[in-house]
Image (cartoon, rainbow, N blue to C red; front, side, top):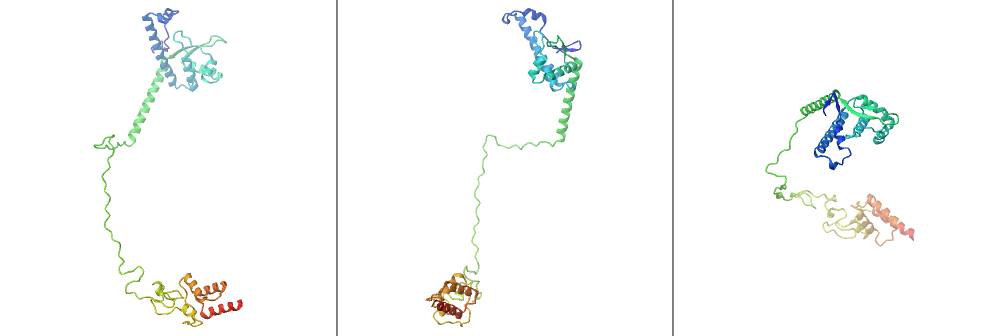
Length: 318
């Protein structure tokens, strides 16, 4: 836009061109006139863009968000051919979605800020707007924009100097982005020859070599049991020459004294088997049997006590 008398004006279609094309169809315009018309409209479009940018960058306290929106809308209503620009306050309010009172209050602020002149044409007629702005005001706006741009550039440079340098990823030599990754040939790891650990001089079911056998221990196997290698109703042990005391009692050949307690059995199953042997061929009640089992497991059952309990039960039954 070219300044004139210290102001920037919006370029409009010259009056002589407007009179020459008045009433003529556009297809019948002279070639030079049509070219001149297009040039004026191109200049008008460019000037309107600059004018809107200046309004947007204005830091005047009177030019807030709604004021800039109203000024931009009124600028869009300017007709390049006729120079008319007279939207009513109600039209502005309806187009921008604001109240009529806001428009009435804001238009004078825009005028006082120097973006256009307002001509009142009566109480019932809309105002006429003439766009012009002071060159001094525009230069002040542009100088402020340049200062702000410089400040932003200095801030970015300061941040760049303070920030750590950006490291670039290492380049892959002899490798293209389109080449698939090659996997190295991999052979399974050889497992070293491994022999199971030998248990020197130890048998799984035996004892250490040379260690004397504990005759009173039950950990050496059934041959070390105080009841012999066989169940109580077997007569002889294969590994020991002693006779089973429970079998001897059932045959009346007790090796224990009448008041000597039977040895404590190694397990419940063995205790049940012993009680079965003592109660063989006798009608013994379950309560007496359970009592004998408990006494045997506690190590207090003697042959005399067993006979006494079974005899009492038999007499009670009779």
